[in-house]
Image: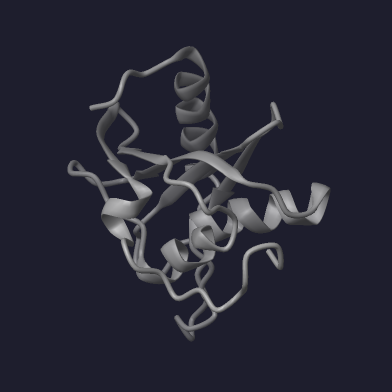
Length: 140
């Protein structure tokens, strides 16, 4: 696993707090996230918010991205932390990976774990080596 720095430890705590706010009455699958953007000291929290239709559910990673965009506009992702109420790491879903892709051209680490500890790190490009991207350089 990639070295855990103090800022990543802090992001882990932010994600753990966000996970406590998960609204997951249907799946009982609570997820929390924290995303750090380059040049921004704020750690943006997110949690999953379910909807009985399931299609209207918002994942924790997308919740964190929307929080950042709502407050400060688009930025470039530096790293993400994703926690779930599971023993083994839970990976970001394909939709979340595609949304994360919208906010970077670079590879970045994704730290995963549970409320007890971080257990795994993978690079964004390990998850999504070939993203759907139709915008020309400079349009993003």
